[in-house]
Length: 619
Image 1: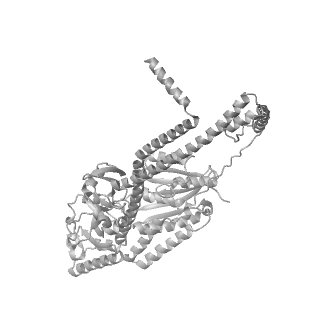
Image 2: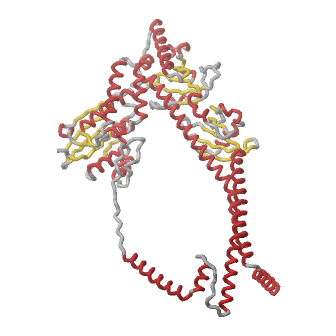
Image 3: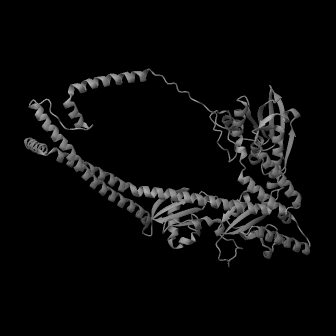
């Protein structure tokens, strides 16, 4: 057996050796090119569908993210509107009023009806507004005042009443007992609980009705391919809204919703069998409603893209193979012709003809061999000279020294204070619009507008460092707006002496600290909110103390905050809770005045928090 294999190997080797070099090169080049083209095409065929699915999924997911942002914007707009209806103060007084006489009650109900009419006139996107009152004496359906028992038995009622936060709402598409059964418009409902500001007893529940079109308007402008669609749904299979332009492509949406809900993730994409048809599903519920935004497109439509790419690869591979065959043939002929000429010259040289003219030129291997054959010794001398010169150049390069100077630049301070927060502006303007319904609208609107104007004038100040007195004036305007927006009375006490008022401070230092006190420090059960700003001198440093009478900070959280304030690697450009944050304030003070200055915090639970600002004393 071994001898037979040896003979077979010898025969094959002799056959190859007997083939002309031109044919050997042609066979080798063509075989190699065709082999690699087939391998590359095969793996491309395998990957192309995955790539198309991924790119389509990423593109569709980006569209869903834009839809979520649009939904959140619309939801926020309607929540601000319903807050403005109540925050004006007049509805509050009407709800609390207890008229005894029938005429007074009738006047009272007519006044509420006028308030609702005015609100709907201003907010044309709201189709209806209803009040569910806890007082049975003032139920009048014609005035949109209903008994609270109409909605008391719904499972969301108790959680809604338990949360007394001003920004707590409940959104649903399910109509209660008072919904308009004759309406053909798809509607969603937003409920808002109203409490007495003194004893926090429930007064009423407000409900606004909005056409689904006004919340999910972005969906109608989106279409996935020729046969895709987008719709909104709940996990329980309830269809909320769908793209009207692609209704025909909706298909078995309940099956699609069930398969999406089975993944139990906030967003993602996958291929699912829906009634025997493979559908590419992409979903996301990154919106304030927590409802699914689902996009679907038949996998066959994506497969068409993959097939077109595959067909292109096949055509391209065929063209490459044909071109490779032509090039291989020409190259082998050119190469072997020169080798044949070289072989004849070597034969003549062997016969003693040392002046033979090879007649082969070029800088490739064959040309080099021919050149060395014509003048071997001369070439050797030239090579020696070239090697010596090369060695000399390398030695000079090794002896040269290059010094690299590393320039370090301080990161420019982020001019975040020059950027007006669009949410703050929008909410303040909505608040000013709501003041139209207040008891003294002229005075309230003038005060709010003046405070907002002074705030923006301060924002437009180009100086990075201001006086302490300027910061205090800005905080007073800020608190004026906050008190009007949230119907609170936050008392500001300033106990800074004249020398402290004239000291320098980085602009927008006080506002983030006071914003934290309002947002995290003041509980909902107290009404005597107070913030005190005072100063003292400790070891040649001006210490500004900002003290509130809030609920304080937990011990573990306080330790965490103080540790973060001491870390050097904290990024100045990071944002805390969407604003500058106390960490950025600390970083800005250190970067401008030096590491000896900055922020410290002390706090006692249920007693309050003191923020200490260490600043240089300005002469």
